[in-house]
Length: 165
Image (cartoon, rainbow, N blue to C red; front, side):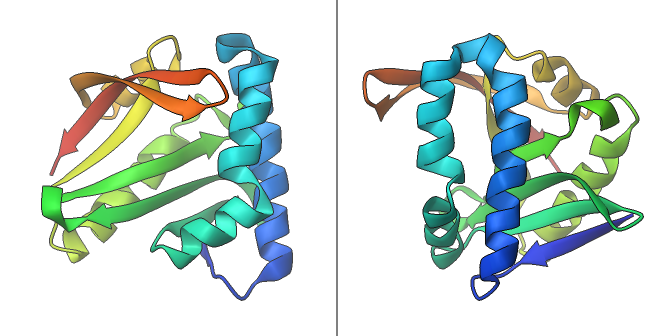
């Protein structure tokens, strides 16, 4: 099991990340938010161009690999003014879910959060996402709700979950 960081100068790896992200997000979110909003969000947040832009702005993307194969990915960035690490992406392929792998991912992110001198991890989760239960098992607690306009007539209606370290 390994976490492999993605860097801005890795064009082919960025394409690989975008493809993997699109596959996982499409499968998971189409039933929750519908294909139209999901396709819009994939283009807005998981395209090659958007991943590059995020990397330029301090995001840390990681492939999660087991036996050399991608099983998931995550991305986070520090928000020192709020004393948190913001967990922007946290995805595992469907066939690998329910095997305790998310614990390894969160432990890694928690260590990176501590190294950065931050006190908590926060993330947004769609209110209808079954992953809310998984985050609760990982120790996250609902801190607040948010409804964010993401353009094109679409909104993200989320719980903001927090894990204090």
